[in-house]
Structure formats: structure tokens, C-alpha cells
Length: 95
Image (cartoon, rainbow, N blue to C red; front, side):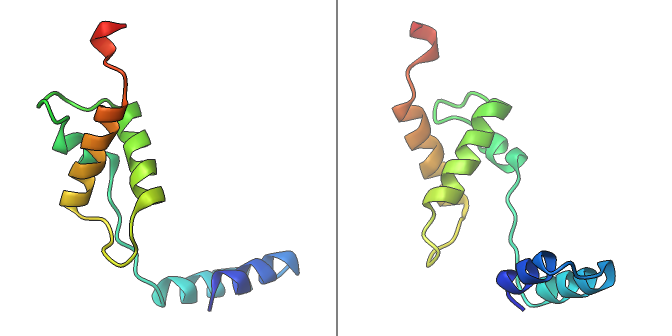
């Protein structure tokens, strides 16, 4: 079962039961590893200060967008994304 199979079922007005069966099968044939916003907040900024929720959400989006599927997402990768994010972001205290 692939996502395009599920899309096809939706496009062809499949019954709720058919959709539930397809989703269950899709979930059983894939692995998901999830990172939470709280994981990113828990790492903190490079200067040791707390990461705000809106920054953590943006960091998560960057991590997802730029990750290398060969290596996945891990703590070191998240730390690097956080460091890059704050190095590229204008200093809030100087505004």
C-alpha cells in the first residue's frame, strides 16, 4: 500500500471501511519516528537560553525540510539546525 493508492481510494469515493482498512495497512507497513517541539525546546539555544515555541516550530520545519534521509534526524542534527537558525537570525536584543 502506497500513499497514491490511498489518494486513489479517496478520489473514487471509497467507503469509510475501505479507507480505514487502507490506512491501517499503510500504517502497519511503515515506520514513523517522531520528534516533538518539546524535544527542540529542551535542547535550548546555543547560548543556553530557552527556545520559544514559535522558534521551535520553525526549527522543526527546517529540520524536516533539509534532513538527509540517509542519516535521518538525530540529536546532533537538531543541535546543528538550532545553531544555524540562531546564527542566521538577527539578534533580537539589537532591534
